[in-house]
Length: 214
Image (cartoon, rainbow, N blue to C red; front, side):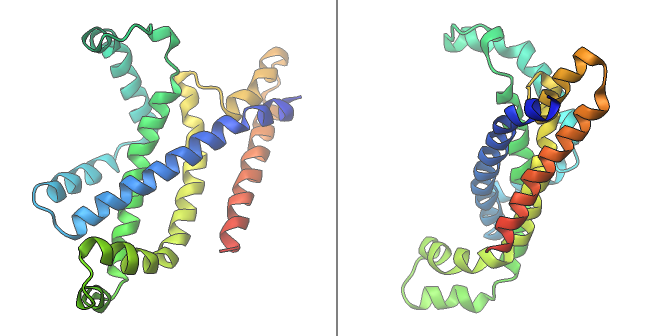
């Protein structure tokens, strides 16, 4: 029963992990590129933000942003003429926001490391054939960074999967919470935690297998 309940909420965790990872990959790459090219002002802002944010525990961030959201929602809704009451706002939005911020910072550091693994001759080769900075990045540099990034991104994805269960702190029902729902009826929590662990392991193994197929 607990395993079935855990599997029933697996799509919530998978969707949360997948969407967060894709958005974070895009944002992290943009942040890393801006910092690599030392874009005035923006590179300094992102450098400080990444350094500070990476030191913030995910659970603390989730609870902090949830309190801010609950406190400020009414005022913001009035200004923006939003008629949806706070009781109807899905708290998973906070989960997405927190996980995307944290993962984007982590991914940006991986991408910055990958930049260092590309020989500067490759940049010069792109410029020499008439490509601008953007086309050199998209056609020459980024494709060469993929093999360097894959192992780190795979680890980041698995780490994100494990961190996704923290959204249960703001009443989002995912794998772990779903597995514990039947346990609340029988006060037998061991089976619930074991079932949740099994489902996380299965998803994690799936990610590992896909990684080996690269």
